[in-house]
Image (cartoon, rainbow, N blue to C red; front, side, top):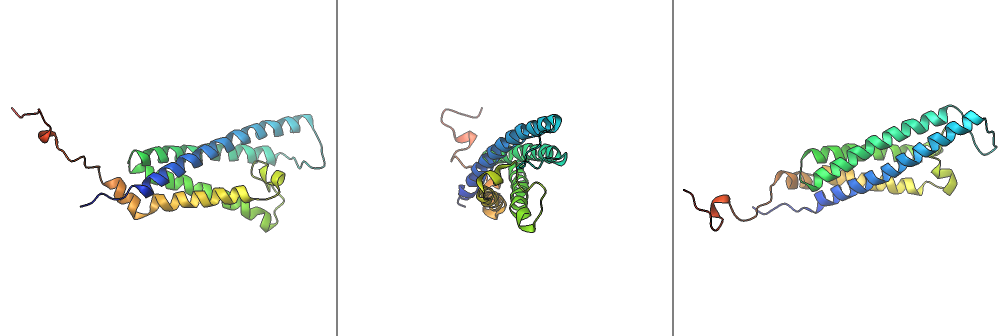
Length: 175
């Protein structure tokens, strides 16, 4: 029987690790913005372009925690996939699902007409569009798909065959 192809498993692992690093950067950005929003609340800064209420630091704090959790799932799942460990498939799929949900929500909220926290870490209003979140959504969906397809499961279930057994190694004799 031939070896299953490794392309889907390796691609899922690499995408999961890259996505995890992106969510780690987002967690750092949320932490900085969380601290900044607390300072603005404490000082009482009022500016026409800043809609700051107590809900903003709360939203940013929750987003930072979710980002760290997603980072842990994606990075550990990606590493385990590359090491051909079965739980990596589940971890990468769970992290990619959270990433899809978060990016999809960020893209959906402005279309629904909500005024609350239209931006995800304040990035969307600065660039005027949601294309970075569309990229995150596509990458997370690709990671989810690659992690869950049967070819990846077959690749994880099959151990590499190096063409020798312990008793057939040269210089080894059974006593």
